Length: 253
Length: 288
Image (cartoon, rainbow over all chains, first blue to last red; front, side, top):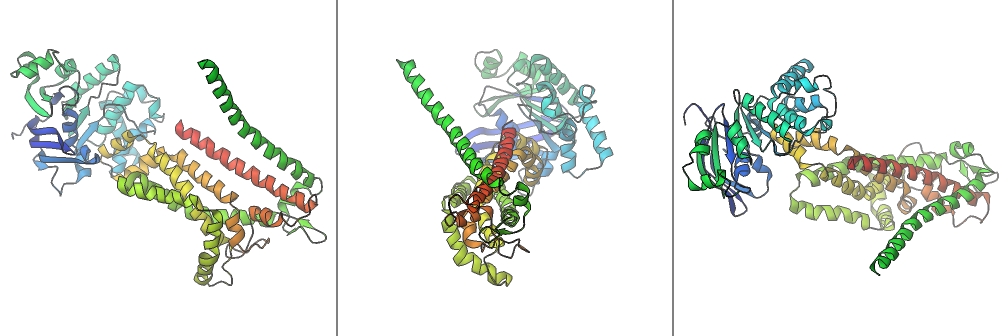
């Protein structure tokens, strides 16, 4: 693992019951770059994404084999602290899921849970996070409004701001634009482009143009296996595997 | 032909639906008719604020304050116990228990609702009242506290069941979002799930309260039935419901005493109606 690699996955398999959803994957995810995970529905890419901050722990019967190292630390070590891992590895979900609270309280939620309750600090964090998520200008005069009254695209950027507020190192995004209209999607994509300067981003997407637009590296998954992983430009222009080529040219998926 | 059948079924269901409204209206009118008869003899103010309930002495006295206090006291005791226990149990069932534990525990709690109230009274007389007497070292175990204790048990299934439904209705995505931000399960419950379920939880408490205020047989059997304003919850008292049940059979039909019981019924109806109405408001709000 070189210094530029943030996440080192070794021989990872994930089982739901007896069926493997992810089979023996090894991959090195680079730091401060966007890595896209593509593949047809049910190929295991979302399952894989959720192993990186242990969100699969929530699914009864899910079991993993292998190792996931973030900065060299095995996050599945029995002694590892899940709360600490999720603080370092944030997540944005497919559907915007702001809490039924004010805009301010949504962003302040994470910092509050980690013990920061000073009003001045929170105000600073909220402004910084919303600015990073390119939402500050639209909401700065109505921070006390109910978050669920925002548009879908704004809600998703709010969720990104909420994730950024605890200063994670890695941001996992599970099809973050799939429930959004094209204009909101473009905004989220621009945002990802901006965020990858400071954060390691892993994004699952169904949309191959999106993968091509936002990511530096792309991993192609099929039936729980990692078929090919390379520079995005290479995956989309000169794939090595026939199955990758078939998928990106739209022959299935 | 088929439309004709649909039409008939639709109308039958409509009639059944309306009949429940008609029945409710008739009960109310019936209470109102006999209750108002009473208020032409004794003023509403004297009725509600009079501190002496001696309907059969001469001159008779129709103050229901002791009964209001009695009902209020058992309700307070019951809710003080049932609300924390009920909500805690609902949180455990909804958020913490494994599905196996839940499958056993939830029906068991709900079964508490299937026990007839006279059986609760029975247990109250033979087990709880003597236990209260020796535990608090008081002269009689038949107190408002004893009544409240048993009512708490009776209100528990209502509170647990509805509160658990309310927690269940909170979208899983809120929980996921909170955990993904590094919050612990407990922080997620306290700061996300409970606030999101607030309306439903209030509805659960209100419906439990309605159950407690309307309960008759158990309190009649265990609270000692003294229609006086009690000095504390560890004295005997009597509720409105118990008064009606105890005195209805002994009173002369058409007497002022007879009508006064309808007056109590009217007060009780108003209270439970208000509680149910409030609960319904919160249930609707939860559904949003």
